[in-house]
Image 1 (cartoon, rainbow, N blue to C red):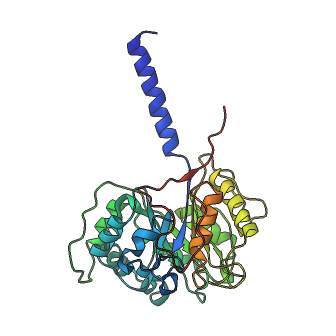
Image 2: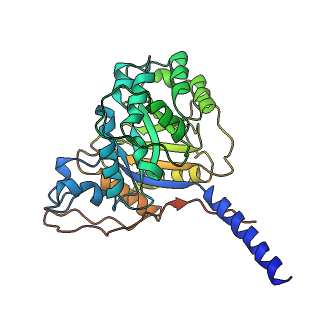
Image 3: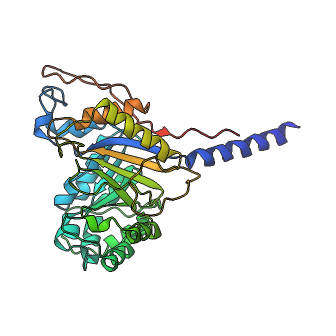
Length: 343
C-alpha cells in the first residue's frame, strides 16, 4: 500500500475510533449542593478555607455537582458564569428545576415560568451543563395528561431553550447569553408517590426520553430502577435514615455493581421495575450519581469512595479539624467509561 492510501486508511480508522469513543457511556459521581455550614472547619472544607471558594474546592474532589439553589429561586446569568469559571475542564453540573414549577404550579400553565427558568442563565454553563432534574412533591399523584403536557413544553436542545428564554417576563440583571453550539438537553424526573409505580408511567417516560430518577430515600418514597432514557440519574439520600446515614462499603459496592451494569447498557439483577424490562442498550447508558446525605457530612466522602471504587479518583482523605489542605488539585476530571467490547 502506498503512503497516500495508508494515510487515508489510518485517517478513516482514527475517525471511526473517535466517533466510537464519543458514543461510549460515562459515569459521573458527585454531590447535591456544596454550600453547607457544617461542612466547614475541616469537616470537608479545609480549616480556614474561604467560603467564596467552596465550589472551587468541591469541584476538584468530585466529578459533578447538582445545583439545588435553582430549586428555591431563580439565579442570574452572572452566577452561572461564576460557577462555570470556578470549576475544572470537563466538570459537569446538573440543575434542579424550580419548585415554583413543580410544587406551586404543579406543572400546570408553566410555559412562562419555564422561559424564566432558562433565561436565568443556565445556558452560561455551556458544555458543563448536564441533566436537568424535576422533583415532584410527595402529594403529586400520577396524572398522564398533566405530565405529557409538561414534557411537550421542555426544549430538547440549547437553541430551543434560548428561543423559549427570550419570552421571559422576569427582570433579570445582566444580559443573557445567545445560544452558541447546539447541544441536546437531558431531563430526569423524581417522583415521590406510590401511584407512579405504574407501567403506563414508565412507557410515558420512554416515549419522551426522560430518565426516571433512582431515588434511595430510606424507604420513605418509592425506589424504582427502570431505565427509561439513554442515561440513568441516581440520588442517594440515605439508605437507613433520610439525609443522615452514610453508605457502608458493602452498600457502595452494590451501587458500583449497578453502575457498571448500566454503563454496559444492561439492567442489574434484582432491579425494582415498575414497567417492562428493556432490552440491552448497545451503546450503554451514561450514569449520574449524586449523594444527598449531607447532614452528617457523609455525602462528599461517600461520593469520593464510590468514585475511587470505580477508578474515577483517589480514596478520600479522612476529615480532620486541623487540616489546611485536603485531597489533590485537579485541572480536569476524567469520566469512567464502559469497557469496549472485544471483537
